[in-house]
Length: 323
Image (tube, rainbow, N blue to C red; front, side, top):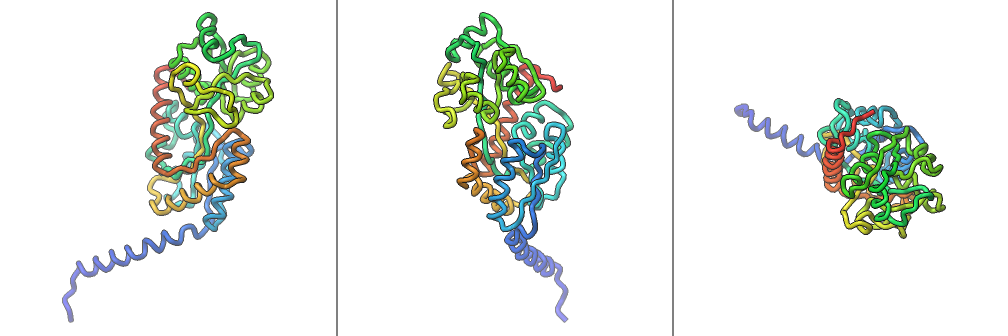
């Protein structure tokens, strides 16, 4: 009888596992995928998730089922995704507010934007816009800033600690504009008071403001982007207007629980990128002021890191306190 050699047995087990691993990855996905959207149905987060989810389902050969888990500014759904198995079958449709702004404002969210997730890819993004009511006398951004220094202007946002609020604080720091922040419970009521002339300005997404700007009900002073937006080609960037580099974007992207296998992430990234190239997705997203991206997982990880650092600095320097 040959002598028992443990190292041979261990080597055989390792070989078997090594051969089995690619087969498991090659079969992904072999069942439906749950896509957690941490906001209620009907908004831009939900709409973009369903559009991309449909294309991803076609690419992957399995249903991508949207699961809306709204509450606490997106933290309930995000925390649920973070606790899910790292197998690629439960994913998160994360956005600027839940992934980089809330973590800059709050402790003990139940998830860490860096440690709890594996970025898959950015889906869409849109720049923040500075717009004002038609009673303002300033013809351009330079005049607006100069007039605010003579008499402070009010600027509305969707709420204390919202992306619009933090963008306004960053704008004040970058340009010296004298703005008084007025928080609302949502972008729509904030916009209504700007339209009515009770508030001078608003910082919010192109998704919210573009219909009012395109019909001349609001005047757009600047886009917080590195280049002009195709939806508002006549509106200059902040840097164009005053020479100060200034960017602030709202984005949505796909994340998996931390530890999801790299090859599974790769398949998901490819499926997401197909969504960003789909003509129907492009048309519908651009109609809401969002530009499909479909970049790599590494690029998305870099964006999350950079935006988290940026908004954390703004929160600290402006002493922003959550509501």
